[in-house]
Image 1 (cartoon, rainbow, N blue to C red):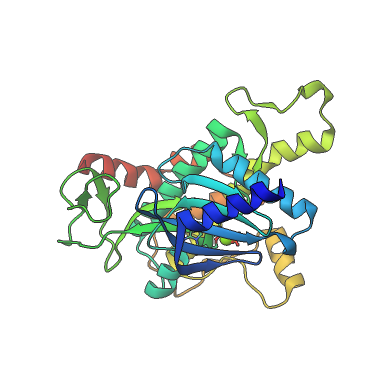
Image 2: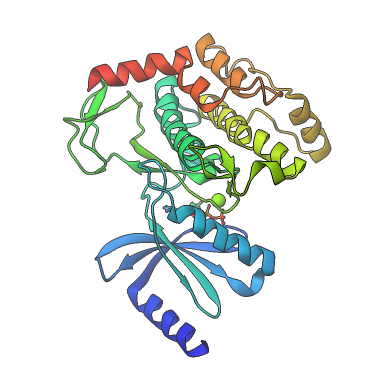
Length: 316
Ligand code: ADP
Ligand code: MG
């Protein structure tokens, strides 16, 4: 076994040639790397095992188990997992623009169209996770939402672009809104480190095992877990539109109280020019009672969202 792991390590290091460090978390470092077998660039999340206790190691394996099952254009694709003596390597699709977080910092805030361009793609990913896979992401935030850039934007009008290729000419296919300076193409969500599978088969909405034998805390957990992603979606949408989060305070206890009460404002002057439709959509997501909160289907049928989706559809 020792021998096998050494061999795996050697092969991994040979196959993936690290190019640049592109990200860092508490326990992981993410590199851009060249896969010499396919000649493609990939993202490799390297996790040092010795920093993790047994349950944290198990959660890395869970992250991989969940990622393996996912197949959606707005979710970072899983390529390979290698375990060595010292490290875990999670090899994924490289999303070359990096975090949407940095774009918000760069542009201060996004137009309503660009915000919808981003949030509708995140929503497509969530719909897939919730409805088809029974997976709750549980860590949606601008740091875990990545994008592929569009390098060339020819005109100010609504733009069209070919498929998924960031380098392609903008002449057919998907509608790209007038983004004013930004070149944000396909959005992909990543970091399934805190994600959880609540249903083995989402179409049946039957939990892993038999419902009759399931403990109350599990049943309750299932009832309210999808809704946490919808709350997070509301926080992300709020940030996209104005550039700062709905809840913030230096004191953690004050912040906690504000979140618990759902105490946020559409602060003037930053929100003055933003439409009532946008504000309504944010409010429906940032609703304290999870039973009242927008589900993913409610969100995709929100009038402000529908108006945008119809416009995208017509442009195609
Ligand atoms: P952590 O669990 O440590 O937060 P993440 O999976 O979020 O790990 O990765 C950390 C950072 O690395 C991300 O916020 C992002 O900047 C970068 N990153 C991760 N995966 C990718 C990817 N597939 N493509 C591009 N950048 C990535
Ligand atoms: Mg992260």
